[in-house]
Image (cartoon, rainbow, N blue to C red; front, side, top):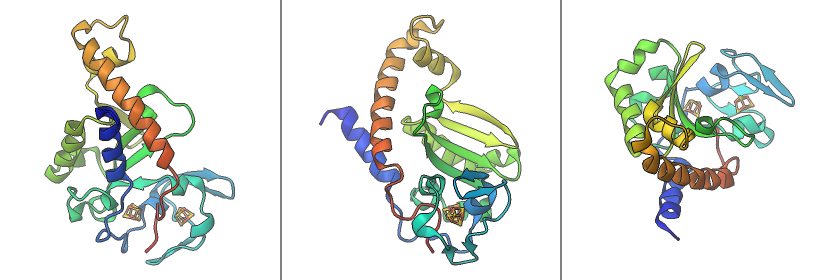
Length: 206
Ligand code: SF4
Ligand code: SF4
């Protein structure tokens, strides 16, 4: 196994292992905040799913739609995230997103940080520190998403351009770094896709 493979496996292990001490409890954010348009379940954003059993979980857990199976709440996976960051308390959702259909380069697999209440919440220290940790990890693109808008905060614009357009970019000094980054990212995507949807307990199992 080469270094890129090893690093991909350790990141996949980290993001696909639920922390036993991180239970959803009273949080039902992901079953309420997100819009769902799936076979057998259509619901608008910010509407509690009719299948939620309050404080207990999902009444159709075994047959819940794929969109629910492939939701990867990072609060339940990342021990370095403070307990107070639970989405119903912080009004901030951190999630790993892995698309199985083709998306733009930096959206295919990424970390998203959704500010449910206000864009200004990105300045709260525990939030900004968590975002910075994902940026420093350097494995996946990091997006901020708020009130209908979104912004790529990692890779930075120069590196992103060098990764996306290595032949025509103005940032030629970043091309070598960009090629390495893209090779690691594509390897990681493959590893993430192999696990996507297979993990027990995606949205809620309380
Ligand atoms: S998986 Fe959903 S319900 Fe559980 S903590 Fe995360 S956002 Fe809340
Ligand atoms: S996990 Fe269950 S309760 Fe939650 S949104 Fe999906 S179907 Fe609804």
